[in-house]
Image (cartoon, rainbow, N blue to C red; front, side):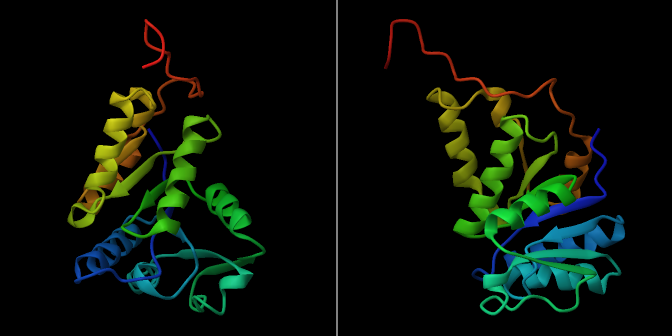
Length: 201
């Protein structure tokens, strides 16, 4: 079972339409505080990023932010965090967040959120870490992405065992429980999906 003391959460600098995404971020933040799990995130004080951090702090939790120097003005780094690390680049940001965290969750977000989650997932596929990765599928936001992963398996571009690396749920409590129960399936390593008999399709 995974022991999660620090959770890295990828989320957006926008709020999304309606209030469901914002509330999902706040609900996750309150949950992390109740369970004594430190939040590791991108360090901004805007969008769902800010809402997540604020909810965690207001509930008595700890929050570690990691933000690139070039974004401290544009995204306005959160000034009330337990710790704030200002780094030189996005690459350094992602590496530090990964090193600090025991698992990864993506909230609904845009290209940056998807890129960060996909990299963490790829690192798991390559065996560079053995940490759980999950999607908080608020309002069914990630339904099409999950369907794409199933399509990639069906078309031979993704192994079923790698598809199983992606945990998903709409309820933060249930998702965190699933992350904590997750166990690596032996030694994770990358290998290509074998070409079907009869040659290329």
